[in-house]
Figure 1: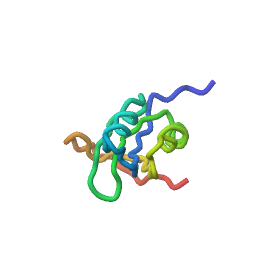
Figure 2: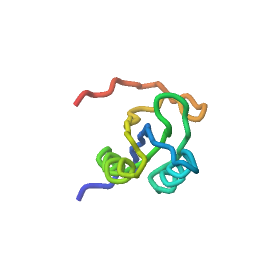
Figure 3: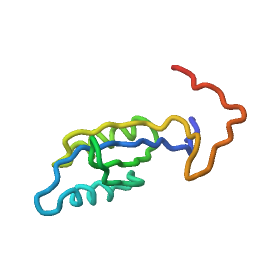
Length: 106
């Protein structure tokens, strides 16, 4: 039997959305933020509207969530998913670079 990994996959997802007439971006942002997979959701300036941090058990788990849930919300025009591969600094803390090696290309 294969041992279950305690690690999780994190992705940053850019959402381009159409604001609602009376509530602007808030209606869709609240809906997105309610998903348990969503760790954070921010309204942004620039090329996209919402920046969403998502966690899952695997790349496929996150991809399935984006395809089946986020991208099907009425008013979501497009999504762009970026998987976090390695952390160098988080929450002001620099990671230990001792023994740092290149990521394998598979």
